[in-house]
Every structure is written in structure tokens, then in C-alpha cells.
Image (cartoon, rainbow, N blue to C red; front, side, top):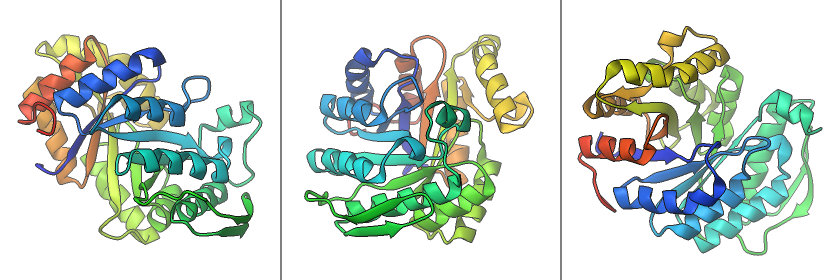
Length: 295
């Protein structure tokens, strides 16, 4: 478990102006990653990533996730390249389908979500490598686009997906897969099988988001998690008690992270619920033996 990266999510409901201070404190505590969210009506993922990167010195920042229908691949590649040039080695770009209802609200629902995601990830990765892209796809059309300032260190592009065909797609075209909250070690076995079916090699990384609540009162932890696991269970189509979390005492939470790492997670990103999220993060990092910048 020593190599698993520990990240923390900056929840979409938290005020954007508090992000710089939060990012600095997470870095000082010894977190490896901070992940920002792009959901329709909340914060912009690229701008939030820029804020977090600019406020810190070491922290890797992930965009989790940019909805492909909302983003021109050319513009997204330009934005990512700018961040990767200024903050080399510190960016991870997550791209996903977007919530269908939100994409319809914004007037950008694609005819083929699978084709759009594949063509977006493929073209963004090629542009970031400095290639000229000519693509007349089902959903994406690019005519001789090339970046003037491609990054020297190309950031990984990961797919935030859930369903089997999308997981196969991720294995085929992305550098890694970003796995939504509620998925546990058993789910990771299935994810690895499906991404491998798509062609994923050993370098294809798994990043797991997980609801986290750390405390010594089991009843209080359960009450705090309940609305989150209930809603997510409905979304995942599984009973609430089967929604995986990193929770309990700090030692128990560290054990949950260890289980995810053994199942193949390269990064575990905690979506902390309840009071004092940074205090909860600090307790987990201490239980893992990781305290202070650079641990």
C-alpha cells in the first residue's frame, strides 16, 4: 500500500473562494492529490484546477471530470496544455460522458455518447502530444488542428466512466480510469477485467473516488454518511449497505484504503463528508504513516 496516492476532493458545494486555502492546507498535511469537480451549474473544472495549482507547490491536481459534450476537444486541449506547461507533472485530466439530463439542459446531448467520448479523448491526447489532428468522426470534426505550445510533459488523460462498454472504451483510449464513489475492491476486479478487454496494459491506472467519514463514534459516522450512500446507492442500482466507503476510525479508514490498493487502485481520492474535512484527512494520513509535505 505504500505506493497508493492519497487525494482529497474539493466538494462542489464548497465555496470556490475557499479553494486556495484548502489546497494549501491539504498539501501541508501530506496529501498527494486534490481533485476538483465539474458539474453543470457548479464550478468550472479547468479554472478550479488552475486556482488549486497556483496556490500550491507540489500537489497534483485532477479534473474530475470534464463532460465531453460541454467541451470542444480543441479548446480543452489548449486549456490543459496551458496548465501542463506552467505546472509540469502536476495535472491529471478526467473526461467523461456528463450526466445525460444536464447535457440535455445545456443543449449539447450527443447522438452517440460513446463515440463522442472516444473521439474527444483520442483527439485531446493527440493534440497534447503535439500531433496535428484531422478527424471527421461521428461526433467530433477537427480540420488540421495543432497546438503551438504543446506540453513538454504530457498530462495523463483518464476516463471517468461506469458502464461496461464505457470501461472497455477507457481501456482502449485513455491513460487510466476514474471510478465513481461507492465502488469497492470487488468492483475494481470487474473494472480491471473490462478495461483489459478494451486493451488496457499494465500502465493503465485506476483512480477511485470514495465517500469518507472518519470518527470514533460509529453511530455518528453512519448518520453522517447515510444521505450520501442512500442517494449513491440509488444511482448505482445497489443496496445502500453495499455502497463502499472509507469510514470508521482512522485505522479502519486506512484499512479500507489498503483494500482498494490491493485491488489495484493507484490513487484513492477521499470525498470527505461531515465536519472538519481537513481534520478527517489528517487523521487518515496519520494512520497511514503519512504526515507533512512530501511524507
